[in-house]
Amino acid sequence: MNELPSALGLNVSRETVDRLNTFVALFRKWAKAINLVAPSTLPEVWRRHVVDSAQVHALHPGPRIWVDLGSGGGFPGIVTGILLAGLGDGWVHLVESNNKKAAFLRTAILETGARASVHAIRIEDAPEEIERCDAISARALADIDLLMEFGLPWAKRNPDLRFFLHKGRDYQRELDKALGRWRFDLVKHASIVEPDSVVLEIANLSRKPH
Figure 1 (cartoon, helix red, strand yellow):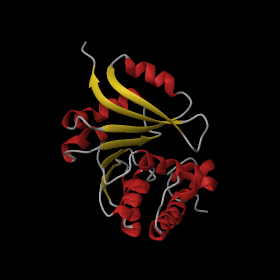
Figure 2 (cartoon, one colour):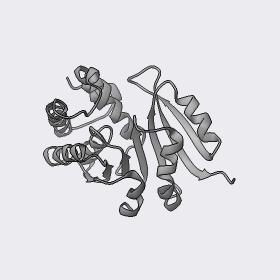
Figure 3 (cartoon, rainbow, N blue to C red):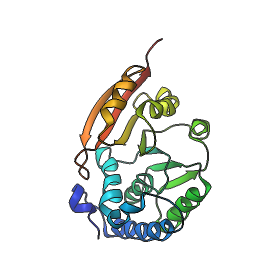
């Protein structure tokens, strides 16, 4: 079931909905063979993963250049790339070091026409390969402190860079830890999918002096 337009108030085309349906069918097929998400969430793939992922594009719409860290099963990166395909502009650099997951992501791009490319490298090496971006996304990957460390090279190159990080109910502990090392502006967006979850929008990142 496609819940995307009504859930987010997005005006998406029939073609975009078709692309998303193609992606979900492919995702279900591959998820039987490789561990793309927690199996318990598969019956609710639209709500738990597609709609949850699409929140990012809704918060930062337009033809942006994204870096999606630890893209895994394509959430939110492939979903963002499909929504950008509807705009005909923008791009998502999917960073995923696991070769099986990277193969899935390449297949998803090929079959959906998502505006994206796969970088099967370690996240630490990605800034050497991807010169610049407007925004960074990450979902179920690492603590905020580490995600900031990963994103700092891009933040130094682009002062307008924004992070969009999906976080669960324990996010405040992670934020408190990050505040010990970093300066940043923060906007908390309540998740429309999970009551205890948020999407943290972070800007103006810099490391605190020792």
